[in-house]
Length: 158
Image (tube, rainbow, N blue to C red; front, top):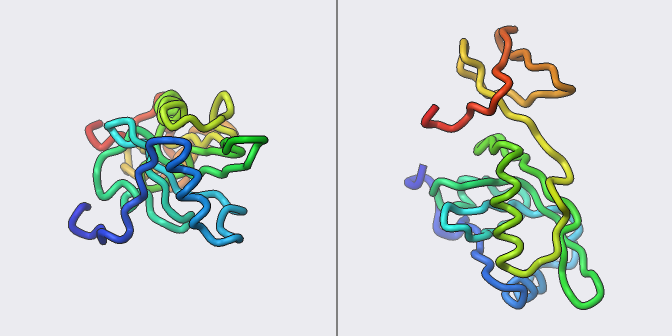
């Protein structure tokens, strides 16, 4: 995957609230109104990119602990997360990856909710191997109709 990632498409690493403030100030007036693409790297770093960026590109082709979409709002004297999801069909992170996202946001010093504001449940079908988004607790593969596992199983090592 790294071979197809252009250097100019890699997300911006954010390590402090001041760095985030500088980064978001550089965005156009309309851009902060919609969520951004984020990844939490295996080193715990938060990387941000424009919303229509692919998560694998944001991560520079590296493995991640979580990925999704994130929105921000200015609260009094600091920035905070207004919405955050694990919606990434490329990475398919488990909802349990919230702890990694929370740690990355806390390290930066951004206010945050207590969990994903929108959780997406991903499963890989054991039979046809396709990735599925589970909706309304219906653990049935949309491609072949077989039952999906209750536990997250999308990790490429699985």
